[in-house]
Image (tube, rainbow, N blue to C red; front, side, top):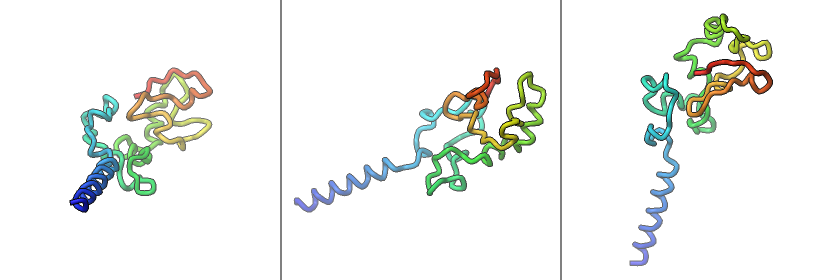
Length: 127
């Protein structure tokens, strides 16, 4: 009987560990809010968090810019769309050119913030 209790306890610990390590994709999407303009498109974590942009096998890291560009187009195309702003073009920075990561400013699960404003005081309206 003691052996069965020990095995049952070990099995319980293994199951608990497996459930704790389960990817966030299995989590309720309501607990992982996305930006309003993405709600109709993004139907799960794996839309952006893919094995292709995984780090050391962990797909739940900040997605690669390729994921953003698969829907939003190239950085150069975005720079053309934002050429007529009253402020300097954030997608054509004289500091970074078109080389800064999308997620430096755009945050899917939290409030976006212009990286330029670490030093400047631009009035960009970020989606």
